[in-house]
Length: 397
Ligand SMILES: O=c1ccn([C@@H]2O[C@H](COP(=O)(O)OP(=O)(O)O[C@H]3O[C@H](CO)[C@@H](O)[C@H](O)[C@H]3O)[C@@H](O)[C@H]2O)c(=O)[nH]1
Ligand SMILES: [Mn+2]
Image 1 (cartoon, rainbow, N blue to C red):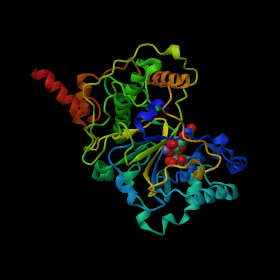
Image 2 (cartoon, rainbow, N blue to C red):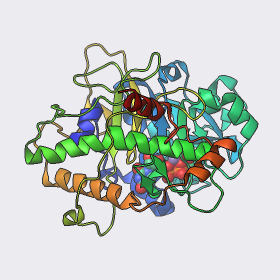
Image 3 (cartoon, rainbow, N blue to C red):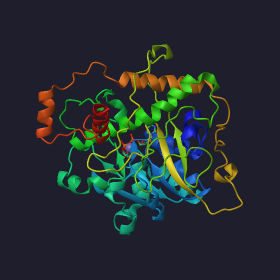
Image 4 (cartoon, protein in one colour):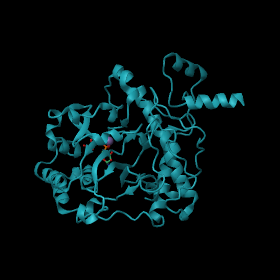
């Protein structure tokens, strides 16, 4: 929680079990709805006039503020059934009335896929036909890990990608990663496309360079890290392209990110299992897109993020009561880190260490040359411009 509050302006913990009865009713009808129904809480953020919901398995590559110009309910087509939208990225307008209607809909009709996407598609059922402006371009919710991909389109439009979504059962954090080569290990299925691998490498690069140092600084500072004092935390994505704004450092900014904290849960990882901090490369961040230059602006492995624009309510601040009577107040992120925080840090570090395959067979020079000749250039890894430049710099010294 302390670490999240360094990155996000506002962190609100939502506790499903403490929610009102209608949630429990929905639970009774379709218990599997539980986890993703939590998304519906976002409609209670009425101290914002417009919000953008992002799944925790999305990776934002560049500034997407223009999404605030879209109306509710805007979303991109689902790659598996394009007449439905995908609910991993959507623009919405907080409203207690809509929130209530959505929950009512869940109780009365359930969800055709047992989760939020089915529910939202049947609730906003006119999406596919009523207003093309509510169809977000695919670049705002680019899924690169589906079995079928349209490679020429990827080649033509992929460089404009703004949000990548790792939808499906296998998430980036399920892969093994080699920090020496800066690449994930292929799963051997042969299903992965080059685009997918590049985006996975990018996710891991951001995680390694921008997220882990936050944990590291927390751990180094022991129990005495004062929230808001980012000791030795690198500025993530300082080189963000164009209008991109780096993560908020301190104090409120106009753009607010609300986070639902879901800590990583490596079952059986004891804190004493965390041995040795992996040698992390900190000199040059790899910051290019496989096809062209969008920079990772933020990435998240474990949180549901909602980017919001404050409502035009000059005099009234966030009012918890006005949002929902049973909702817990925003968590006090100004207190000292709790043992729970320390545990979460250890768990996250353990996950990272477990995810790293230490003994990876490095490709031979012949293999590397063959990859080049076949056009399989590892733009995100060893062939990244930043790394090549690093080598040149070393050579020229
Ligand atoms: O234990 C969990 C599981 C999910 N989530 C949140 O729910 C989101 C959806 O789950 P995810 O595994 O990302 O689903 P997808 O593989 O993306 O599958 C699709 O189907 C889901 C269910 O309808 C939708 O929520 C997704 O947006 C849609 O892309 C996650 O990103 C998280 O934000 C949690 O916070 N904790
Ligand atoms: Mn998702």
